[in-house]
Amino acid sequence: MTDFDRDEFLAAYEDVRSDSTDSNWVLFSYEENSIVVAAKGVEHSELIEKFTDDDRLFAFLRVYTGDEMSKRAKFVFLTWSGANVSPLKRAKMATDKRNVQNVVQSFALELQPSEIEELQEDAIREAVMKAGGANYGTGSRE
Image (cartoon, rainbow, N blue to C red; front, side, top):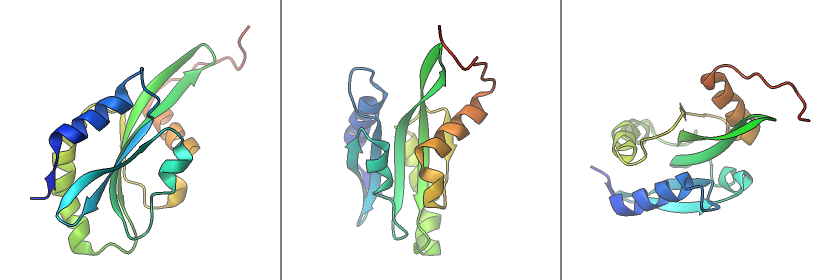
């Protein structure tokens, strides 16, 4: 089993979920036989920079959706396995993901992007909106 610090993961998860902090994402990555909290941040562009073809990563992020009358925070769980990751390491991620999700439990959508383009903020927001159902915005707010 891959080790991880449950308390550290929980603190990072709660930081992203909290409305009283600026954190919009947390990134979990592999370090030898452990998964660690690798980074936290505010800007989505900073998160995307962390994804490479050689990485195995999990991320938890806040996305704002809604219309001009109502903005809502939704949460997304990402699993990333870069193109250069071996099949054995990819397979190991399935068990590790379940363990991470024992801490990171509440999210509206889980994605497993395989291309950097799928990590773009607009692409993720669109996926969240599709998963969430109806959007009734009028296009203007008076």
